[in-house]
Every structure is written in structure tokens, then in C-alpha cells.
Image (cartoon, rainbow, N blue to C red; front, side):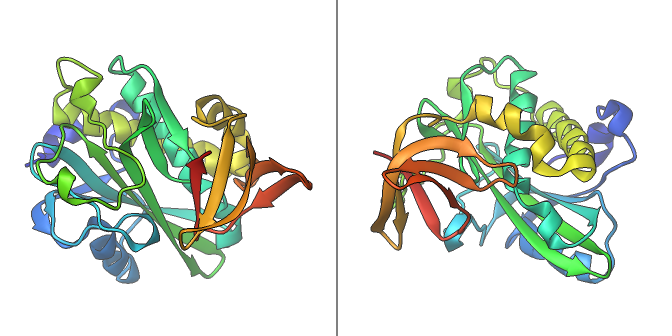
Length: 262
């Protein structure tokens, strides 16, 4: 299991900004953290687990996680203003994840709108951001899952839109989990601070540079059916996907849409 004391010692200037709870097993780190948020848990509360029994990914999909083959955790953060100020947060979190992996020498990590972490067009990890309103503020529970090595049960998930990738195919030797986890928290703190100041707009250029399908032909599906196709032009200042179609550049915000290469 992750040792919170060891992680705190690696956080540098972010030490003291996170309250880390390490669990051997839970249903979902995000579900549990949302419950704690309702009970008044402070910003910086973190739950990390070795095994999730009911992990959640985007659009209600499950997220496979097993001890030693993955790093799975959720972070609670509170922001001034309403939830409307948090548009594009999942994209900003992706930037933090890539920066953390690059600190260990990973090259070629890219992002796919709105919440996938890719390597060589395969899924290395995912991000799930859940928002709640509070008086004059909003809270976000950010769930992150990374494949450290290939889960043994990955082949059972026949409906995956992308093949799976693992960090041990990218970085050798594989980073020690405590050090990797600490670096992820450090980068998240930096991104949260910048996002609080200027929203996604201040991180947009960095996200654009990491957009796996920038200027590539794409399709947008809803419930498996083609809704539109065009060329991906990245993200707008509020995180909306920009797709150039025959009608011009269109903005796409719906979380129900699924982005695919064409």
C-alpha cells in the first residue's frame, strides 16, 4: 500500500497541501471522496487505493485496477465561484499528468479530449472530474487512473474504444509508486493554482501542444451513432472541442459525445 508519510516527504513545496488516505480496497475512490466532501472534507483530501471494486470511468464505464499494476486515486479541490468556472478542468488535469510523467523521462504521452491519456494512440490512463456546487464556490473530485503494467484482465473488456498501454512499456525501470504519486500531486497543485487564477484559458496552449489528434480527421459519436465528422482543431478557451466541418468550426461541449479518429 501507498504510505502517506513517505509521500508527504516527497511533496516539496506542496507538502501540507494534501491529506492522503491510503486504502487497501474500496468501491471507488471518487465515490468515497464525494461522500467525505458532503461531510466537510477540506480541499486537498486524497484517497488512493490498491484495488477498486467499482471504479468508474467516463460515460459510466468501469475502470480496471489491481495492486501493483495501476495507480488509482482521487483528489478533492475547492474553487471560488460556481461550477461554470470549472469548464475545461479535466483537460487541465491532463496537462498535469503529462508533466508528472515527463519528469520521469516519459516521452510521447499525449491527451485526447476530454479525459484520456494516450501513448501511441493507446490508452495509458483516464481522468474523471465530478463537480458540485456550494455557496459562492464549487468543489471538484478528480479521479485519475494509470496503467503501470498491463492488467491481466484487460482482454475481457472487448468494448474498449482504444487498446490499452502501460507505463512499463514507456519508462524503464518503472518509477517507484510513491515517487510517481508524489510527482502527480505536485503537478496537480500547480495546475489547480493556475486554473484558479485564469481557468482553462491559461493552460490551453499547453493542452493544444499535447492534443493527440490536433489537425487530424475525427468523428464524433453519440450512443455509437455518428453525429458529425471533420478535422480536430483542439479546444476553445473554455475547453470545448473545436471541430472544423463543412459548416465551419463547430464547438462541442457534451460529455455524451465520444471522439474517434476517422
